Image 1 (cartoon, helix red, strand yellow):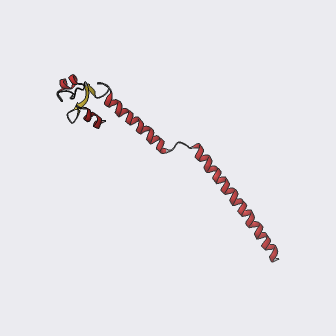
Image 2 (cartoon, helix red, strand yellow):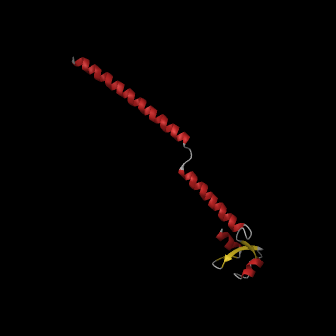
Image 3 (tube, one colour):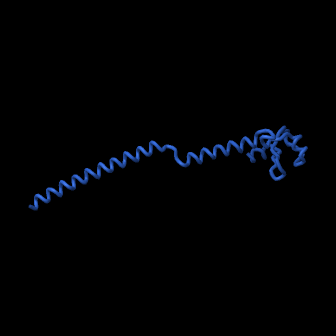
Length: 111
């Protein structure tokens, strides 16, 4: 009788190992399908909205007044914030006293 029970146990363990391996295969397939179907990750959204923000900032800096902050030397002198653009520039960025880029280096650093 002991040999018979031993045989059953051996068959049972083989069946369990087959079931486990099938379950593992199924789980691996599911993970691969989930990986393929969800190729959009959370950081894609972060990069997308960051790109939009950078584009909006650059447009605001380099578009002409009233759409952006780039003003002519005469407009800046008229507002009274500064005497105008320096270094032969026709346009510069000077929306208020605390942010006034009137030369090339200041505009580059502001951007």
